[in-house]
Length: 460
Image (cartoon, rainbow, N blue to C red; front, side, top):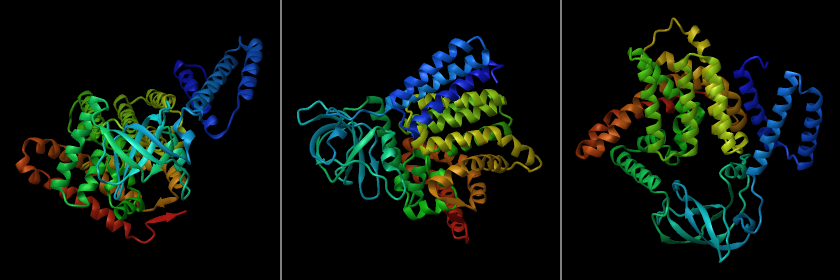
């Protein structure tokens, strides 16, 4: 078990993750941590000379560190925290610290509190405001409202979902006054301005629902997708296409690399080209945590393909998960996107080579074979999580993914080319978006037709 440095490294990483997982599901007080530490010290005195037990003791110590790290991430609520004042009418000043989350009939703002009625108070509040007037990242605002604690609804742990972003209070229908603009990070402000400019170009040159669908696929703005269409994507098991998920990014990057290799480009050049595309993509959409995690997972899957060495890629994947959990331990239990991303990459590393052998005789055309291989691998490993979290199993998902995934890399290439060229050739932007329109129309029609198939999905 501990015969190589690679296995030892993996064991210690997994121990930390186990510690965080234990603390995520079980309340462990300081007495039990102290008792565990005491038993480790006593046991190590007698068994330290034996290699196996020495590593076990170190592993248990790392598990304790993982437990402590999770507990440290849960804030202690006192008078200096805004969540202390829930169920009270409050007046506070704060900064909008994230891109405004625009929905169909309202906008959600994440506001970092800077002061509460002459008190030094901090913490984040999720504030629901009307669509107009518009607020944006970097706005300094004063807000008067009644604070509420987030609560679960329809079986969804909304409170824990917000807690992973350190949000423990929210308010709706507040009185908001804009104090000043441009108080955020300069680079992020410029990135969001550029992103909004791209959204305007998309809305100008594409009709609905193609415009909202392309904004979701390319820029991560999935809130504008009509609910009816979003439900059809769910029925056909293709919801990952309209979210910045690890499964989405991973499949696109791997297919792009496979296409590059099929065109006889050098493996090293294809790898770095797709890596630069990933970095540019995450930068363009403003470094949202979900996109950073998804792109990291996509990069690791591509790296595994590049190296062709299973052990190294698995250790890299576990190390990436360790770093993400170290930064924010709450994602292990409460970030479904992180869980799906991790499982999808595990499937691509372990199961994709198996499907590659089974499909060896299948001709490769327009990335269809690669798409089928990636989809089978990712869907098998993510299926239990999807059923558990969403209560739905798509029986037609494999066919739907097989029909839409091969065109996705081409959509991204053609779509981003149209966007960037439209910044220069504004007069011709409408014509540049014609190929994008036809590909999106194909995607929508396939999803709509397949969603009508009887028993396309089973609800649990």
